[in-house]
Length: 399
Image (cartoon, rainbow, N blue to C red; front, side):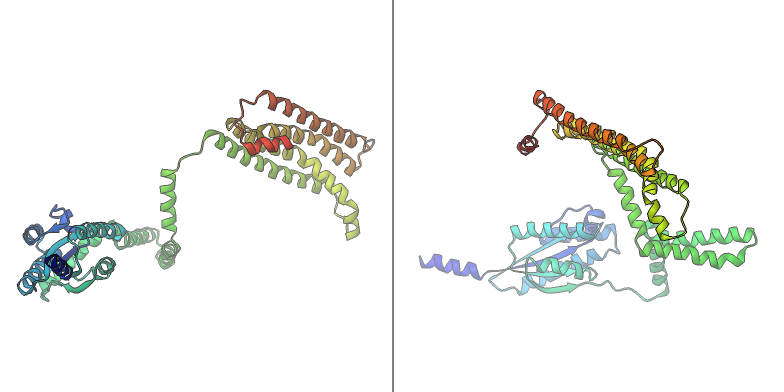
C-alpha cells in the first residue's frame, strides 16, 4: 500500500519537457513533402536533412537542427524526474489565420500524446511574435531559442540577395502590380504625350493618375470592387415569385414617380403665377386639381402593379392575404374615378358639380362591401388551397 502511494507521488513529480520546433510557413510540407507533427529525435533529424537537401538556404532546417542539438544537451543533463521529447509542427504556406489554426490543431494532438508541463520553443527568429502566444495559451514556455542564419557581407552575396528580392517583386502578382504596373502605365502615358507633342501635360496626368491610385487604395475601392465581383459570382437569385414581386415593386415606384412629374407639369402649365401670396392661396385648389388630373392615371397604375406583383407572390405561398390583396387592387383601381371627380371639383369645370364625386364615393363603398363578401365566400370554399397559420385564421375571422 505504501509502495503505490510512493509511486503516485513519484508520478506527480515527473516533469514532461517538450522541445518544439515550429515551421509557421509550412515549408516542411511544401518543399520536402513531410507530414507533421514529427515526433522523435531520429524523425526530426531525417526531416531536417531532407529539407536542407531540397533547399540549403531554408532557415527552418537550421531551426530543426538546433532543436535536435538542444534535445541532446538536455538529454545529457536531465534529472531523473524529467521526461524529454522533441517534435516539430508546421502551419501553412498561405500564412495568416489558416496557418495559426493548423499549428494549434497539431499542438493539441501533440499534447494529447505527450502531456508536456513546459515547452522549449525553437524558431527561425521571424515568427516569434505570431507563434509564441499560440503556444503559451496552451502550455507554459520556459525558453525560446531563436536561430538566425548568418550571412556574409561580401558584395557577391549582397547582389544575390538583391536579385532574389527583385525576382520576388517581379514574380509575385501582389507586388508586381505596384512595382511594374504603375511605372509601365506612366511610361505608356509619356510615350503617347510625346507622340502628340504634349509633354508639358505629363506632370498633370502623372499627378492625376497617382491621385486616383491613392484614392482607390486609401478608401479600399479595389477591395469593394473585388468583393462585389465575388458576390456576383456566388449570388443565388431568389425564387421566381419573389423576383416577380420585386420587379413589380420597382415598376410601380417608377410609374408613381413619373405620375408625380406629369402632375407637376400639368399644374405648372395650366396655372399663371400670381404676383402675391394671397393670389397663391386663392389658386391652391386649382393647382391641386390640375396636379391630380395629370398624375392620377400613372399613380393608380403604379399602385396596382405593386399590389399585383405582391398578389402573385402570395398566390404561390398559398397565403390568405391574397384575398384581401385582390380586394385592395379593385378598390385602388376604382379610386381613379374618385380622383377624376375630385380634380373636376377642384378645377371648377363648367357644368360639373359634386354629384360625380359623391356617386364615385358611394360606388367605391359598395365595391368594398362586395369585395369583402366575395372574399368571405372564396375563403370558405377554398380552405384546402391556403396554408394557413393559426394567427392568420384568427386575424381573418376578426376582420
